[in-house]
Image 1 (cartoon, rainbow, N blue to C red):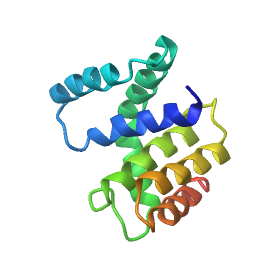
Image 2: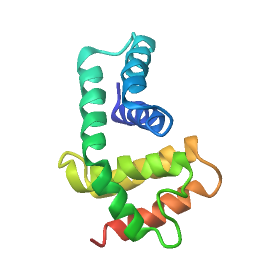
Image 3: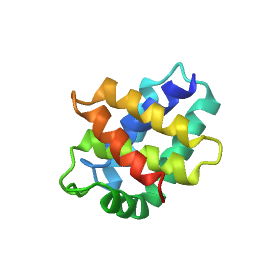
Image 4: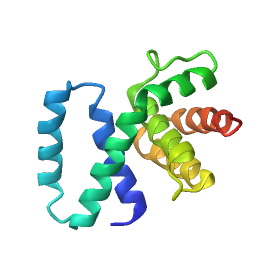
Length: 133
């Protein structure tokens, strides 16, 4: 799988976090990967590992998003926007393999695919403020 596809799969799993408890997420992960039967084992490992890494840092990431999103707190954001921002902020600040510009660009592309008309601009604006950290 290409990196963009992997990133979209991570987004899809992270999105479910907002609607499931920890126990249900385990089952959701199993079901998700059953549907990815064509995925190579290394792709599955990459998706799982990045998902877990983002989950681990999510409280810290949410604080950063709250500080940088003027007029919007994570508790009020749309779930698509919040999930995109969480993944992008993780990549920007904690994933040395992903350049900041790539993380921002990929977040905007995911926003175009999964979000509403205003989502790409919103995501880009918040991430631009995060780069100023």
